[in-house]
Image (cartoon, rainbow, N blue to C red; front, side, top):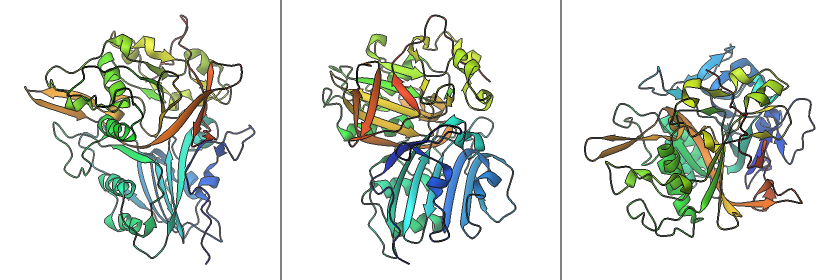
Length: 433
């Protein structure tokens, strides 16, 4: 069989297709487009992970001869066909969850790596807007050298309890052209990391290490958590998610430092965590308002968007950080989890995160201090996403409010409009749960 054409050899970011709208192949992808499972070039092996999985809905898109492994927190409409169901360890299953959203698709001569913000349920592919990162890699019988991308991915799969035989198939995939950096989170067990953890850093700590290696924050070069004197805020963060948790100023400070490549866990004062003055932290948390939900075309908010009233009305919740979330398709809801970070005086360059992490301490981690010297970041969820550099932000036309996002010179198909618009006095977020 001749080599299959690699459709996305250099990676691509797309938003998911919406029912009843005009979809552009340069900006949108449907589930069938991603799976690309044809009689001429069928899927041979596949791994799917999600928080919620409708097995019958997913598997009717996949040929019956494919060997399929599934990992999910909640499963509905279980299939009668043979699949392998995996369940990673949850030390505190009453509160910890599997939230990773990932596809690994193996074909005869290629492998497709897909990071998602949605689940494998019909609504997330028809009436709710999500984001997708996809990259294709060459596969053969040759053994290829490991690199950071393949090693991190292998560690992430091991953390999820994926069998070693499936992970070993990556040895025959050429990841030399990988363009993304992987960041994961793994639930904590008491005061210690889980025994099977492989990565040195997860969540917000891993994000800080990635950003530092990218070198996008040239103004604070040489500044770190042990030598914070002279730190100057240089980034603006626009953060979207479908769920918000118990945030406070300290946690936003940790995320803001990570956006500059500074790891909060390595602060020189372990008992007195570093907290920046509030006027130095430039973060917008984009979340739908109650008015938007009331006017939406599809009645799906209760299973799509979450912010508990007790979190929002807590006096520590940073209400002034909330900004409006404007969907690309009017009167619909956005389920995407994205962070846009721009740097410099003109805020032209930066990086982007896309994946399963909501903008919550449960996903990214929260610092806990114990005793005189013990500091550890506590994680609640299994998560996975990618960081992309070489992001460019451009104000287009006469509308200086909206900013277009480009990656390697190509416009990114985001499911929302990047508009920095604070909540009005009458706006309140949609509260659920």
